[in-house]
Amino acid sequence: MVKTKVFLLCLTVIVTLFSMILCMELYALERSIARGIYTDVLDEMQDIGYLHSGLAEYYTGEMISLGWETVQEDFFAGSSPRDEVGRARKERNEMVSLTMTIRPSRLSQWIHYVIEGETDFHFAGSRPSEYFDPGW
Image (cartoon, rainbow, N blue to C red):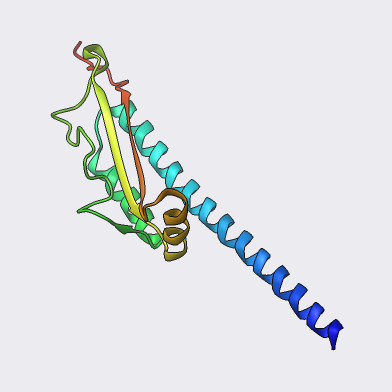
């Protein structure tokens, strides 16, 4: 009888620990995918001087296919410049800024709330533009 209770207790502890490790690994994976998308978009913005609508649509589709939701009107709300006319140029020392907010899966929301105190993944940053105007 005692051996059965000890066995069940040990089994419960092992299952609980493996479940916790699995949850943390899934959270880390989801956050790293989001961070990777953020850095890819910011690199592209830095090269072309603005957030191209085709680029935003492509990555929006990728994030929706991952099951993520937008928090505001789109994933890249607050990013600038967003059109070719307002393109940031290197010769003027202008900056591109990207803000990306994602509502991840429920599991990641819970873990992120415990760790960071908020449920959404939020990435923001600026870099100097690398785009040179060909007429310069």
